[in-house]
Image 1 (tube, rainbow, N blue to C red):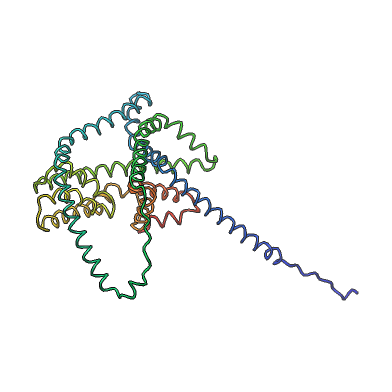
Image 2 (cartoon, helix red, strand yellow; image 1 turned 90 degrees about the horizontal axis):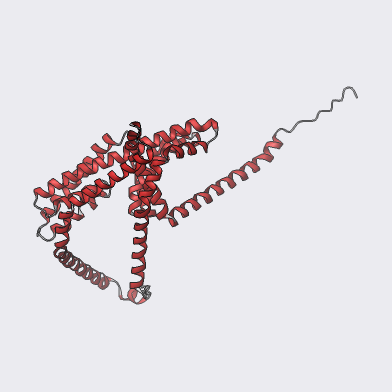
Length: 372
């Protein structure tokens, strides 16, 4: 018996083999919950777009106006009074600019019937040409294929007037919601910044509060630089367009300059959108394609300068996003919220990048957003 050794082999792989399916199932469940959470957030952002857009616009404006309120606070003016004074001054400035452009806008509105008639005539010409092309394509289609073609089902709204009115009322409601609540939200955000800041930091555990504070500070600097830089570039483009339209003797050069300058600031599609105001006015005067091509060339050149020279020099140091990330952001938020999405797409994406840069597990996403 002494020569007989009884050995029980351990089975170290058994627990691992049993735990592997459990870990895989847990990982799959976590991924499913993450997808469901993202879907819920996107659905909320879509259905509550008016509320979310109002809040985000208020945040952007508050970030821009905060340095002025802080400066007043340094000279011993209470923050509540300083916020009110800065907000009233900003409103008065916007009103003064609008009033100065009112004269040019009145002349443009008075001349609108003339532009409208030209537009209708040009649209009728294009529609006639499309009808001719459609008839030619129909004639080229084999007779058997035309006979086999399914009968088109009319899906026209039996009550187009009611649908149009309801859509218009919905748009007016969204605009009034933003216009009514935005000033109050901006004021409360500016006046209660200290308390809101401390309350936001308190959401995080003690060990992560320093990183949270650094993240919020970087977001604040980035947002202020982005808004101020875009306003400066919009002003430069507006003045340049104004001078150019005045030089070629277009009517209402101030209104057209501001419209084209602001539209030209939109990445990628802004260069085409900026053509529309001068083209509409030029239809009543230009009879050849030369002036249209000249205006398009100059505005495209201004867009290239703004996006490749002014934007990197003024705001590029704070907003580090690659072209692919910017394009995807514009497509997604533009689809989600329309024009407001195009305005907020880059700030939202830049904030997400800052957050990703300060969360270790999300840093690869942050590097991808900023890779060039």
